[in-house]
Image (cartoon, rainbow, N blue to C red; front, side, top):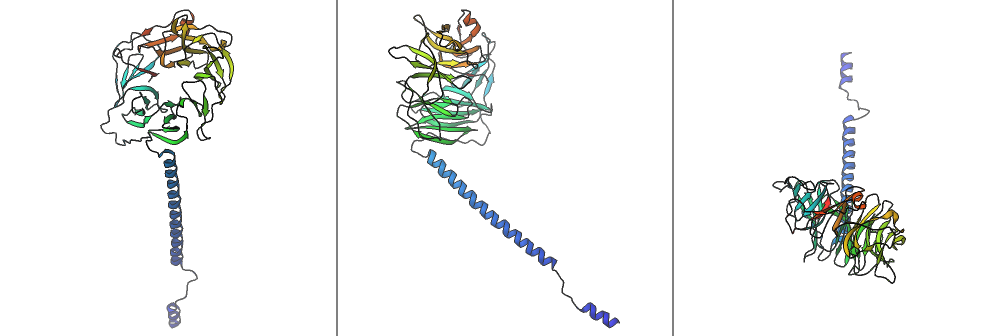
Length: 391
């Protein structure tokens, strides 16, 4: 019995399955699959990056292109915007701000110094409220577009450009570059997705109208056209009458100035936002300037525009609801320069020719009390600020 049992124990029987071998084979299969997936992903990534770089090069590569991206990832030792309170503001009112070279000045007397920015022509807050988009004043080298962040980062987005136009929400920018018009998106401190189209030598962007850009083919003549970036080249202007466009109404239609046949006098008109800019309502009562300066209240009721009362050059307040009924123009204050900022439906601010701040109260103007200019606190005489919204 003992020998029988010993022989049975000594005899090695083959196992029906090999667990260790199965585990090794399974691991090998998983490793091969992961290796293949990694190679495929790397190939796809390489193709996408190559295509993206090729597209970017096709859109922006050209001699003398003004697009500059100057990175500053290290925030160490950045000069931060410095705020100060110079004292009591002698003319309180709705809060607006001014850009004077490198300084923001609010109507309540606060000033914010922006580092490393030259003279400014216009400025708008960034979409996230973290700083400003600043359009430099024109120079022999052209215009520049800067991002000035609240943490002190100052970065050039464009240099050597022609006319620069910012979208109202600061998410897009249009500009002239040599023989082309371009539009790009603004994301953080970069311009992305630049789209360009050839344009006549005299054509200039005027403003954004939704996702399109209003372009004036010849600033010396009448007519505008709408270019939708990415939808084809700059279309021929079908409109031959519009002289200036002051902005949109809440329903999307535009308010502009149109030429009249057989007369040097221009009229106001509500225009369709299409290539032909067809007038749907016209009013020819007020004697209007053709300098293009004007602004519409947020509710679309009021227009501030330059013109004449008799022989006196004045800013005029016009009731757009009565346009077409020969609504009279009311003197609102001295002539305007630059941007008009509406704080609400009845309060607006602008700068006169000397750089003084003028605050318009619609109720007082309608009652026969035009606004008067007041010096901007803390701004030296002779300096030319640029009006922007409050900070």
